[in-house]
Image 1: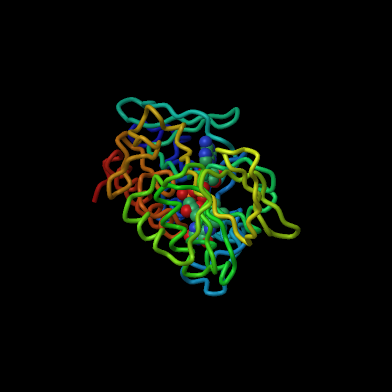
Image 2 (image 1 turned 45 degrees about the vertical axis):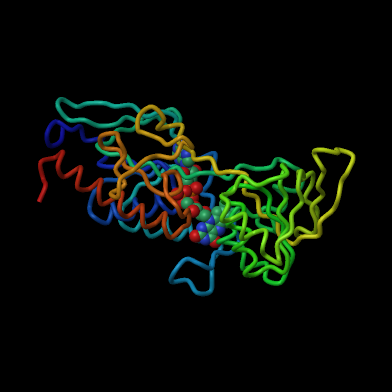
Length: 322
Ligand SMILES: Cc1cc2nc3c(=O)[nH]c(=O)nc-3n(C[C@H](O)[C@H](O)[C@H](O)COP(=O)(O)OP(=O)(O)OC[C@H]3O[C@@H](n4cnc5c(N)ncnc54)[C@H](O)[C@@H]3O)c2cc1C
């Protein structure tokens, strides 16, 4: 038994998720001298690994491949003693050692215990599920205009969706693209009126109403999308496009924490400014939390904050608060 009857095998912090948020949290936790384990996920990778080129992460002016960025995050965290394990966490339960509260996680065949947990499980963009979508992800198909928009300077692109994100991102894409066609399954937009007004007034934006994408086509990269009219299914059309931006919704990966911490209606984890959830000893960061901007740089910031909050919590639990 360790101090305050805490068994030796108990980690100070277990981080669920090995994306920018989780690995930054791991870096801060381990550099501060706490015993941390990051369970990075075996069946899925960080979203950022699907993108070829990130040019908006500060300090890397030449840009970097997403996979390489994650490898660099890992290397840096490992240098400070973070343990990293590839496995999928399948359950999270409260536990106690005497009077001390903690959490027990199951991953694969094994279980792990910690005083504090940082949930950094990310989110995934809802896919259309049409031919060509997977083949051309990162080669014209994108789920992030902020990230990939500048790659389509003076090219024609399409945006799929009719909500706030789709219209906001379509407007953003007009900064780069020659023409932006919004493909929407209905005959009117769901987006707020102010965004609608801006989109309708924009000379670079056109609409394909009552239409769904049937196929994304190209050779090396995207060249055109085939659409079908849902009101008159016999009517199909082809739209030339180098980029296809899909904004039909984002789904947070928060099943593991549902029923334990409070989520919003969309399934995002509710946190305060210190990344504290409604559950004792659980912090959350990155794309899985309710927030406005989902990017690497914000995920890293959240991860650092979550780690610091977890440290303060652990010191309090151990009676070591400064
Ligand atoms: C195509 C594309 C391009 C992008 N381009 C950019 C860009 O240029 N610049 C930018 O700043 N942002 C970009 N983004 C956004 C960026 O990828 C995300 O904001 C960022 O990855 C969020 O980091 P995260 O750590 O919160 O989540 P993620 O990176 O998604 O990581 C989540 C982690 O949790 C793990 N996980 C999930 N569930 C479990 C579980 N049950 N057990 C164990 N592990 C689990 C996953 O395996 C993964 O390791 C892009 C996104 C996409 C999809």
